[in-house]
Image 1 (cartoon, rainbow, N blue to C red):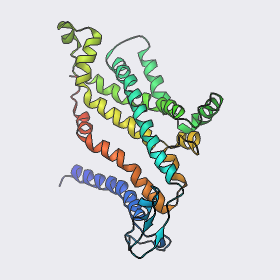
Image 2 (cartoon, one colour; image 1 turned 90 degrees about the vertical axis):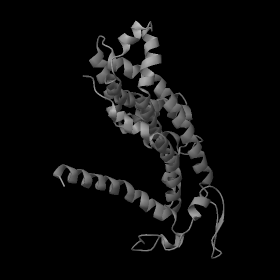
Image 3 (tube, rainbow, N blue to C red; image 1 turned 45 degrees about the vertical axis):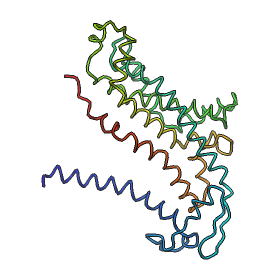
Image 4 (cartoon, rainbow, N blue to C red; image 1 turned 60 degrees about the vertical axis):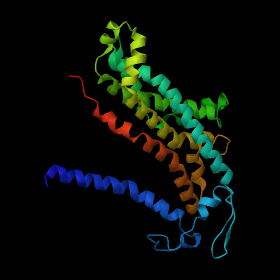
Length: 281
């Protein structure tokens, strides 16, 4: 076996372990009997399979085979509200992001204009700042305009990150698409017509991946959600699970992973194709 292939295999194994071990540990906690969670050293796998956390966290009581009755979690309504809010927030942010980003990334990637490099740098800089750096200014501003504890506030703050990041990601993708605009103009398309009828269909793979990235970021965003929405009707699942005990926390995390897994599974072919675009010769 060649050295390069061996290094690749080792790297893939390490990445899989890095990814799957935390998922397995949360899964182990989610299916573990509450009485076994305090055992030390902890069991590597659940000795008694139990779905208490999955049922109680949704607001239902559960009776085990041994007759033990487990009451619904007091955080059930908050978790269900958090899941719904996160879904609504992610869909809206993704929709607005792609409406803004597609023409923006196309402009930066394929057109030449004055101060292009400066504006591109400004876009990159806007998402390079860590969230904690702008959290206090956002909180002060949103308090004054009464956006703290609202989905509108979270939408605005998430857009300040998803728009520049997805723009940066798609900028290179659009730049590497074949130069077909002149051919489209020969066929009597206007510049806008060429963009809508030719470039967007050609770039649908990258656009789909950008939408996935935007959705996943918004769904998983924690810092802004924790400060701007915790305890309100706009709380998200990321902020809600932070106050749960181990068993309920693990069950809630498993629930929160389902929508991202479904979206990535449905669009996995597009994600793979994005890295197969031939560069310009």
